Amino acid sequence: MFDTAQNAKNSSYLLASLSEKVKNQALLAVAENIKARKDLILEENKKDLAEAEKLIEDGELTKALYNRLKLDDDKIDVIIKGIHDVINLEDPVNKILSITELDEGLDLHKVSCPIGVIGIIFESRPDVVPQIAALAVKSANAAILKGGREANFSNEILVNVINEALSSIDSFPQNAVNLIKTREDVKEMLKMDEFIDLIIPRGSNSLVKYIQENTKIPVLGHSDGICHIYTDEFAHIETAIKVSIDSKIQYPAACNAVETMLVHSGIANKIMPGLIDAFRKEEVVVKGDNRTREIVSGIESATDEDWATEYTDKIISIKVVDSINEAIDHINKYGSGHTDCIITQNEQNRDLFMNLVDSAGVYWNASTRFADGFRYGFGAEVGISTNKTHARGPVGLDGLTIYKYRLYGKGQIVAEYSGKGSKEFTHRKQYLSTCR
Image (cartoon, rainbow, N blue to C red; front, side, top):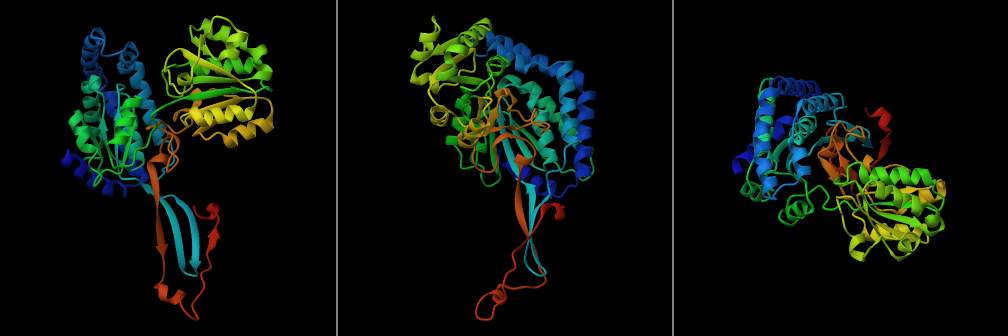
């Protein structure tokens, strides 16, 4: 593990100097090699599926994870298209973000640059491997990947195919994309703050919390996805039901699926019967507070524990509130800072909600399931972050960069700007449109 981390660090310095043309050539080679090696990739994936069937029988793997593990022709095509999408994105590195003239002939540039070495720990889905590798290459970061044991064969063949393609590109450094396989490797990686600049965990709450509690390396991600929809008293009822159903049903296990509905008391009697009936038709278990249960019978009682629970299943909790401020307070208390939505036709309430709800994504009249890097136009994502520093929400290319300051001078020294009779700084800002 030490050698892997050290080699990745050395590779990261070389990656930072690559042109967009070289990076795009590398990604094109990866896409073409995945297409050429499709049969071999699917053959290795079948080995994982055979082992996964045994895990299902032993109760160690769910059918949902099995489905996420499975690759087929269509998924390979999606992988290849995803790489081409990343190729078509603007290079996020070496962009001038701002220029400040400190004095005539002394210019300070703020310029985007790679983070360095990123460790990504994920579960099940092998299609995450080329997705992350493509983002890492385009953003000029070295990557160390650790997938779930249920996808060992698939992950290994994909990393081999990717590196085979990268090695065909002149000037592309070795050890840019690396794979580790064991839990011991993970434990060692978490100690490698000398070489690894960022850890991104993708998976269960327990995985994310374990990573956060066992490393000095900055961790970018989220441990919970407790998302809310607040149906305001000025909501359009059909819109509220449509958005709520999609937010829960489109993929209930996703971190951006809605878990709690808050309904204003002024509209509760009008919307609740139809809303709950729609959930029941989709076989969703509905839990409600006392006021919800007074409106519609046959509902399980919701407790304080429910408000703080990410179900990742066909379960929804509903609470009646008397004001938009009560809804906002509830979300900020029980939410995970992931994605929350207001359904309303009142623009003043919309703005109040979107300003005061402290989440990475705040939506108006739209499904929480839109919280996704691909849907945001990022090409792909390495994960979703509820952090409040560096990157927030779906993390795509821009989230894999940081910045540095470059100072261009003509022999100036600080002594000239201090003491009696010193020169004054101009601190003249230049508009971004003139910086590119």
